[in-house]
Image 1 (spheres, rainbow, N blue to C red):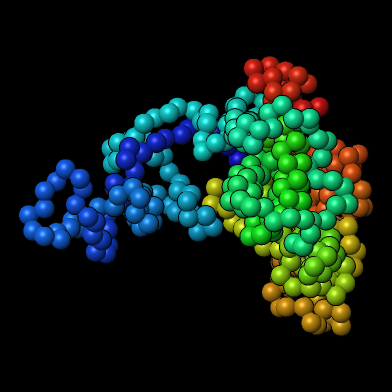
Image 2 (cartoon, one colour):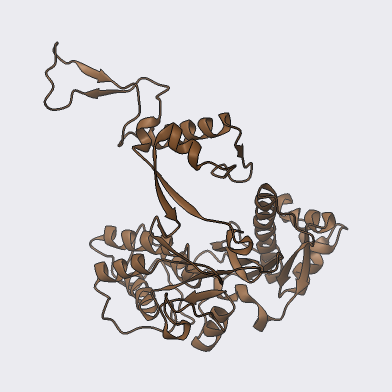
Length: 398
């Protein structure tokens, strides 16, 4: 929204944030080194939270929320971390802040603001991962996963040190915040963090080799774009060889820029590909509803219903059919939120060919040609690539 509307984006840092939180329960600590206890086994009772307390982040969040709302800020019901009102002067008076100026680097995410729009990427974070794993000089891979390769729990040799695998997958999960192109591969890897094998580690290293190809790849939010939600929903029926559960994949665009994407194994086994697609539609519709509510909090109203593209006509027919359907009587009631939102005009289901299904890359490992097509439709950009003129070149994606 900030990119579309040309809003200013600033970042602030609260001085000693956790120390502002008050404790609602009795918490004691041993007397710090350098202080002399007056009585044996004497301890200190904390009146304020401290860094390292498990309650610290919660108490700071409560303190900040109460302070903001006491000054007339409105807290979003769809996202409690969003407060609406001018706040910099108030925060400085209440907590003492450092004004870091226009947004540039925040929690490992780099931002580049230009007249064309906003780029978000994690180049430094990606290079740190490659450096830590020893892949800075590796040969790049064209795709994050070997096409057609399915990871399984059994097979391979258990790793002696599984913590390194878990740490790597955890860091890759955070990288998906600006890299939707690796979402499916990382979702597959994250299923084996409890008992990883050498085969899983090889697959993780394949992702690193793909990242090496373009570590600066990220999302581009253009300025003055169309305010329309375009959504792609897909599933891969019974793709898990061990549980036979399907995979849900979706990607939600505001205009041409992706704002939400997901790859997730479905909770139950689907009896047909139509059922799997319908379950994927239900998950997608829930996410669309949340985004529309969040946009409403930002005082943005959608004029037209969100267009949801699905490549399974049977699933679309089930979602648009208001009469009881024999093929869906065993499906949980909550899945029929699709029909409800279609009837309310919140979403509109549209058919798309399989070759035009953007969400295909969120449900399976694609061969190089199809993956490049998938990547070209994601609305991503690498500012550091010569094609775009580098960060200072102001180049745009063609």
